[in-house]
Image (tube, rainbow, N blue to C red):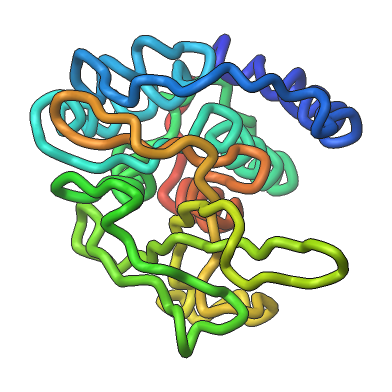
Length: 243
């Protein structure tokens, strides 16, 4: 499948990007209109460069109908986050002596439904609707708990970055970035993390289609399911479909 063939290229580009990107590489293109004349689903369709693999998975899970018809907030995981999770599954299959998958349709719909449903909230939430989070001072700024589409808890908050000036640090005076976080304590695993959740920074926030809000996650710091092993193990134990 074309979507899976993108994986090798993606991994190469991501490595090169981490090495090559500097502040001077970015160009200020001005202020953009956050409004989009269409549904959340139609916005995804308008950006196949970011979301064509995601859209295939959403169709398999039947969640595409939610993004077309209901009022929702979607923390959209771009294609590389999907491909990283599928790569982890294929590694698990290979090690166990099974054939790797070549199509997203070989992963059962209920697996896609479980993991993609994590990223959808009912109703509209802009960045300004979320409280402050400080991952090293959660007692003061813990963010907030919100129910995802299936009723499970997610932590969401806005990180106020510090500003350094003349060897001084001005707390919370810098740019603000939205974070979408998975409470890993639900699983009883991942004790190596220093916070009670696994964070997913938002790259682009507050895109406003007609039926909701869309926040795009930063692909370089996220994998579908927050930990690739969770998605891979679920798909593996559920059983993949033949090609």
